[in-house]
Length: 144
Image (tube, rainbow, N blue to C red; front, side):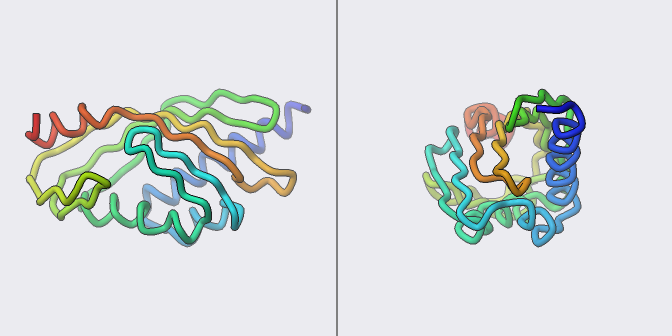
């Protein structure tokens, strides 16, 4: 694949995380295919559409009042981009997880994550795998 296309995929990936960081879930979602398959390995959950994934995206922005994402590294592939990033925020609202609700703790978190995004021929994300350490998140929230 041409370098310009890879650069375009990296730029698209960067935009997605910037929109998430800004709390603009509509713009972030606009980069997802309607039938995106997004696997969250940490919580062992798979979302099968952009609409199904939306509540999960909203959860972080509601649970962490000053939620921010900083992209720290991008690695290009033919049709994929690996995105390393850090989530920061203060846990000021309840957070619903597959294991139950975590009440607000008032603690600051800094969580290092990596997503591998695959793009379809239209330049939309059609598959993604998310990796992060839930035990680290629990420790920072005072649960471990």
